[in-house]
Length: 263
Length: 245
Image (cartoon, rainbow over all chains, first blue to last red):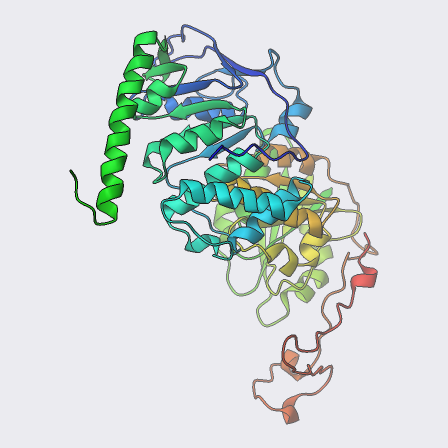
C-alpha cells in the first residue's frame, strides 16, 4: 500500500533549512562546528543520557538566541528570526513525537481529527480525518474504530495516531522524534510515513537501525556535539543486513503473537 | 495605575502565571501589586510573598464571590495605589463559571488549561469570551494536535483575544505576557467604570442563609426550570446584551 501524502491546508510554514551556531559544552569549551539541518534530511542524535541531546532539541524548539545554557543561536534560512517571526512561530515550528505521550482530551478519535483538520482550514475536514485514521491503523498493531475515545487508546495506538496526524496534518516544518523505537509501533513504517511529509527531521535514538537510517549522526558528550558522522557506503550495506535481521525478528514476533510456531 | 483583571477556573494556574509575569515586571522596574479575591481559604498569598510581590487577599466567606468582588473593587484599587504599584493585578476565584470580572476599557486576562476538556472554552463562557488575552497552561502535558484543536475552540469562542501558551511551572511565555501587562491601559479611578458582563441576579431566601429545601422556603428572585427529556428549560443568558466592551 502506498504511503499517503500530507493534506494541504492553511498556515504551512515555509522553511528550507535551519542552522545552529556552535555553543559551549558544560565546561565552557566551544563546540567545534555550526550545524545545518535541511528539509528531507534525517539527523540522528546519539550519546548517553545527560550528554546534551535534549538540550539540542529544546534549543531548536525555543528558537535559541544565545539565551539558553548552550549559548547556541538558531537561524532560519540563514538569518535570525525577527521578534515578530519569533512570536508567529511560537509552538508552531516544531512537531514532537515522544515515546510516552498519551492523549487527554475527552473526544472521539474521528471528532478530534476532524476538529484538527478544521483548525487547519483543510477543504474537507472529515475526509482528511478518515485518511489520518486509516494511516494510524496501518501503524498500530491493533486497529481502532472512529468512535473510540482518545483516552481509551492504548499507548501504541495513541502514538500511531500522533504519528499519522503529524505526518498528514501538522504544519510544522521541523520534526523532533524522541526514541520512536519504544513507541510500540512499526518504527520503519512510522519513519517512512513521517519522512514523506518533507520535514527537517531530528531524531534522538539508541536503535542502530534508526541511527543508520539517518543521513548523519551527531554524537554528544558533556553537553556538546563531539562528532558529526556522515553515513558511509559500508554503513548503508550494514543497514540492509540489520534491516533483514529486523524483518526476521518481526516475522517471528508476529507468528508468536497469533499462537504460531517458529520453524 | 494600570489595571489587569485575571479570571480562570480553579487550579488552572492563574497564580503561577501572575507570579512569573509580575517577577518580570519587577525586574524591569515596574512595581506591581496583586489582589486575590477568593471564597473560603487561600494559600496563594505565600506564593506572591515568596516572589516579593505585595499581595492582599480578600475572602468573600458567605457572600457570592463575584458580587463581593464588584463591591470591593474601588477599595482594592486604593490599596494597590497605596502600595505604590504601577500595575495592579486582580485575581478572582472564578467559581461558578458564570461570571466575568472583566471591566470595560481595562486589560482582561483569562487563564485556562489544556487538561480541562474540549468543551471547557464554551462552558466557562463570559470570562473567556470577553477577555483580551487568553493564556493556555499545561500545554506540555498534551500532544501538539490537542493544543491546536483546543486553541481552535478558544478562537471560536473569542475571535479577537490574543492567545498565548504559557507554562506556569517554568514561566515560559510569561515574559511576553509581562510586556502586555506593562502596556495595559492606565486608569485613575474605577468609579463610574462598567463591568463587561452582568453578575448573576440573586437575592432569594438562599442568599440570606436559608438551608431548608422546599418550595415554602423559597422567596424573592426564584426561578423554576421546566424539566423535560434533554435540556431543561435553560435560564436566559441575561447580561449578554450588555456584554460589549
